[in-house]
Length: 229
Image 1 (cartoon, rainbow, N blue to C red):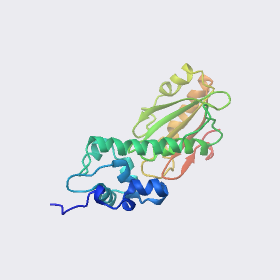
Image 2: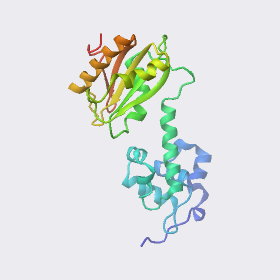
Image 3: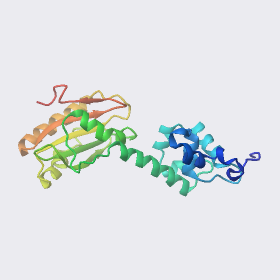
Image 4: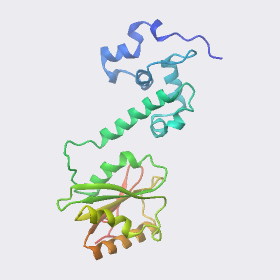
């Protein structure tokens, strides 16, 4: 059983996270204090600062950001309301990483593809093959997940990739998928799928500009590696 915990309201005002944030700004607070501001309340046995410190001693920020609602509610003291608060904060952070004022995002290089998708792809536990459909100026018209699971040339069919390209009148398409292992080196299947889709695009008059494989903090462009002419 937990020992006596000082309630937040019983703490000196200068020690309370919310008051410290108002006075000094969020950069002055520790991770545990920031989390306590988000959670707002603790439990009858544990104040919110102690709860936040315990959570961050059991899960680092990356692990916490990757947890879904079901996983979050298994943490002691975290119910559905607090779980949604945590999930919402991390989702806002992910959206901020890819935010742009330009309503039409232009793709100029493989690095642009990586910057756009890495914040979401780095947390995926399975491979996701995604297509970026572009107009004649390489602005993104549409982004679509084509398949989930290890790439296999017998499973990934060109019609699934080019169906939306035809519907959206796309001039070209860029393929991308993640490697949950963190190593973006292309496998034989990655290369085989790419070759198959490049040939399919030529028949339809839709250029496959690149296939970018995203790993942990790095990527490989099959265009730059010479697999796409």
